[in-house]
Structure formats: structure tokens, C-alpha cells
Image 1 (cartoon, rainbow, N blue to C red):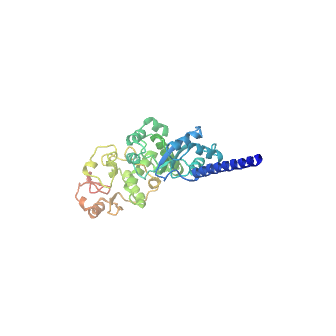
Image 2: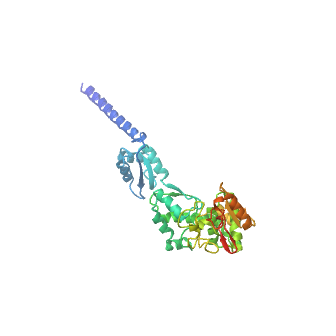
Image 3: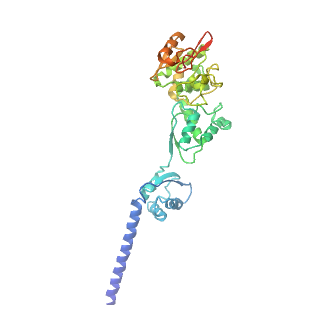
Length: 361
């Protein structure tokens, strides 16, 4: 009887143990494969280099991304992942399973924000975009762009980084500073310029700074990409003839973004960049040109054009003479047909050594 009772107790204990283990296994399985929430809670967590794994597990539990930090550590150990996870910031949500979160940390799929710099945008426009995306305050970015010591480190012999922030898409991890982003943009510019253009600068008769400056003006003027070489030919022809460039975007640089037209007040504004008032090129770029604009300066169209006026569709009418240009202005810009009216879409010419602002360039 005693032996029979002992066997019954053992079987009961085994059944209880099995039930407990099954319950624990089910609970662990639910933890591993079932999200803690619906995905509405999204957080960025940081796995610091050298930090114990249990620290980020506790952080995930505290932020209610997972239900148990201890079970998350257990999962990592069972998978042999504690030594494989990679440091960095991770964007996770309570709609992800702990297994998916762990996989992300093992593969190093760190969280970054992507930021696109459009061709031709000035440092002021880029700063506004960054502030609008809540990445950096506008003033902080602009101060970094004009930091003389920083510019010297980057090898930029200019008053700002304008012109050397290559238009592209950049990854910005949390904690990135404006200086780090600027360095990334300048390094990309240097890479592209070195590969495509550096060996051809001398033959163009322009310095690197002059090349980038003219390219930035072309980028602002050209609505249709195919017209970049034609616009380059106009600028180069006018430079060779010692004619003022009279470029509208230069008249508003640093004041506001160029939107296609300028006023009489704009073209009379005293500025070292205003090519209605200065001779030759501005002292530096007025935006950050892409490769096609730089290529247009190095490989311009061969024309006799000295003028162009914008049509309503964004394209331009190019002219070789002032008379032809004025007729084009009358045709395409009736509101600006009167002599000495504000410029609005064409390179202005000189007549009897006096400005004839019948259209902007």
C-alpha cells in the first residue's frame, strides 16, 4: 500500500511539474511571439557600447514596449544573442514581438532619420528644413556653417559652408550635431568633386570657388534641367565681355528664398552678392549646386547668347542681342515691358551704359 501511494504521489508531482512547466512554456511563448500592445507606442531606445544587456531590457519594460525585462534577457540568452547585439539607437514599438526587437538589435538595424538636401538650396533653406523636421534649431545650424575654425578643418576657404553641402539624402542618427551633419555633407561634396570635376577645373579658367559659385547661380535659375548649359553659356559670355551678370537670385540671397521674380527694391539692395551692383561673380556661392550644374559650367553650350527671359512654362527664351531680348521681354513679360521696370525672368542688358531692367536674368 505504501509503495502504491508513493508511486501515486510521484505521478502527481510529475503531473504538477509538467503542468507548471507547460504553463511557463506557454507564458514564455506568448511573451516571445505576442506583442505587448497595438503598435501605437513608439520609442527610441539606446543600447550603449559596453552596457549590460539587462539595462536595455529594463528600459524596454519601463517604456512598456515589452511586458518583462527578465524574460527578454532569458530570450537573448537562449538564442545566444547577448554577445551579438550591436550598440546604437533603435526605434521600436509595442506592436513588435520581443523576438523581432531582438533580431533588430542583433542585425544592427539602428534608427536614423533620413534628410534630403534639394539641389540649389542655400544654407538658409537647409536650416529651415532641419528646424521644420525638428532635427536642429535653425540658428545652431547656421552658426556651425559659419564657424571659421570648423571651416578651416573642412578645408573651405570661404566665409561659410555655402556651396559645399552636397545635395543628397543623409542618415541622421539621434545625437548627431549640426557640425557632424555639415562634415558629412562636405565630405560627400569633396568625394563627388574629386571624382568628377577636380581634374577639369584648370581648363575652365575658373578657380574651384568661382566654379561652384557660378554653378550655384545656374542651379537657382534653371527650372528645366536641359537649359543649364545654355544658362552657363550666357554667364560665361557676359563675364568674357565684362558685362554685369545681373542675376536675380543674387539680389535676394540672404534675404529670402528666390521664387522666380524680384522687385526694383531687390535689385537696388546693397549687398556684396547682388550682381546688379557688383562686377563679375559674387564673393561666394548662393546655394549648394548638384553635379549637373557644375558640369554645365565645365561643359557649357557654345552660343552667342547674352540674355534670357523666362516664359510662363518655366523655360527661357535666349537672345544674342539686346533688341531681340527686349522683344522677348515684351512678348513673355508684358507687365515688365516698360523700360526700367522691375526685373522678372531675364538677364538684363546695358543700353547706352545704363541698366535696362526690362526683365531679369
